[in-house]
Length: 187
Length: 159
Image (cartoon, rainbow over all chains, first blue to last red; front, top):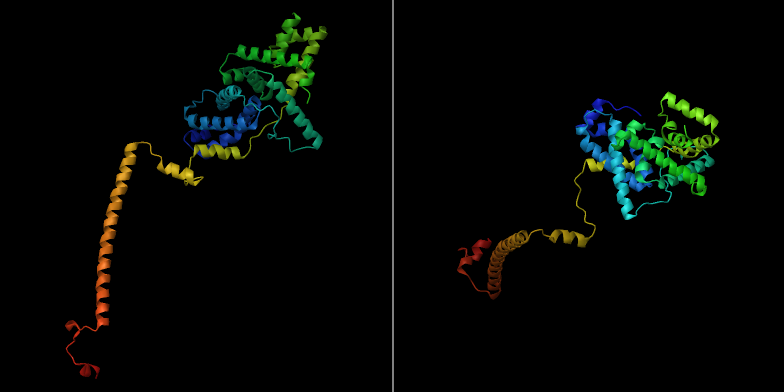
């Protein structure tokens, strides 16, 4: 992840849109990816991304450099995504169909490779749908985004042991599903 | 170490590389001896974590930045009503009755002032037209008006 200079953060905090765009360019992929993996569709993912970046812009003056900017942004993203998830669950708006969201590798490679990528993404989507949102978020942050236990703990505002437990339970569910009902993993 | 405990560790710290060196070594010694735990570890590695770790990198659409920018920098927009009904509804919707009364009274006063001005103007015009008409009619009737006499006989004037 490219580093954002302190100067850029201070400028953006002062309302400089160009400086804020630099921050957006570095973090938009991560924010969108987390939102998409948790919510399962691009419309909600875009809405969450918009909310996250508006929140970042309006609260950047409060960022005190005690943690990394990345951790702070992940914290906002996970909160907004989880809140949106709970809201959409209530209204049963979740779209469980595969949609043609943009995968950066999708336009590269042969037709066979593209089909493989789509199959892989369908499988991942099915796996994540099995999990409750708190476990899903830990799996996304750990296995897809590659955060450490400590980073996840700070992003979610929970203890390290809570992260550990959630990951364990999530993987137990997934391995059980894999071993007993393999068809649910197959496209 | 019992298999149940080993499997718990595999599902979290072992697979996530969060174990210290000594614990990791103990787990690996067990895995060398236990086929069931070894198979379990392979399943988690290949069919769970392995798949997730190879998830595609996602990118939002380019338009997303412009939507965000619009929210950060709201611009004044020309009011363009979607339809006439909506426009009229918006125009005549009044939040407080007192404002409606004041607006109506203002309308009445302005109408009255302009009506009076118009009437005055109209009366002047009518008067002028009446005078002109009388003059024209007087010419037709051949009536002489001493005011028309310029004091010089026609014969002298026409020289």
